[in-house]
Image 1 (cartoon, rainbow, N blue to C red):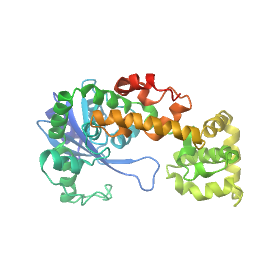
Image 2: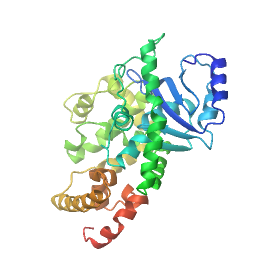
Image 3: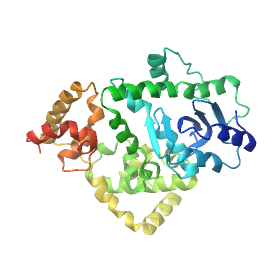
Image 4: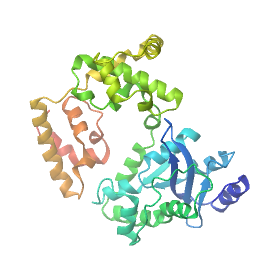
Length: 347
């Protein structure tokens, strides 16, 4: 494991001319809002190693390598890894190949694990013994380090096999498009205005209560961010809803802080508009959604895809309600659907 500046420099020099980087991370996110990055594992054609992020004082040389314009990140289920890195580097990779997404485009289960995919592609069984390890502890057990390294050892092999199959099926541009969707800073920046989406039970509330719940959710998110604590440590969903329904009264100190938050953030009043768009589908909307789902299912079957990869239920409902920003109206998804969408009279 790389634990000194000198070791890091030597490793980076070793992979200086490599631009296909298999990457995984280990982080802790139990008592904080932001993930605490602990390890970064990197594998190339010539080297494989773990970098102890907690031990290295200057990470800039690592970031300079990872965020080079010609570097391709090869990651399995990349979003959390990108997020963990983003909070330290404030940068996003320039190119990405997500092997989980690639596998789903080739008929594998949508959320297939790295272990399951590696067993299918490489006939190698990987243990899951350290999935819940506290990665901040030092020294880390040797077995844990081997577990962490296994998460990148087979990534390159998986990548080459998946890439070749995608090329054979003329789907290579699909994975390129979907990789770019993950390279958007909005995905990794706190979204206070949409904090109401994190409130379990929101959809069951009367519409007149949506605004207050949205305000309380924004306040909770703001507090969680600034205290770097899990949002439910600030206020549980049940408590938040009970406060909105007047089943419980806000404690004096929380009420004072909440009122001050509203005064300081008058521009967040637009949350009322955002939250009020969240209404249960009508009978007509359900019928239209079911018809669209059948249409998409037929097309998905032709390309050996799960229909949810093309369009999930939320995006279909948004489309029915006039939202033209849904994912299936762009790129390869639209190319598959455009003829059928043009024929149907759903909208």
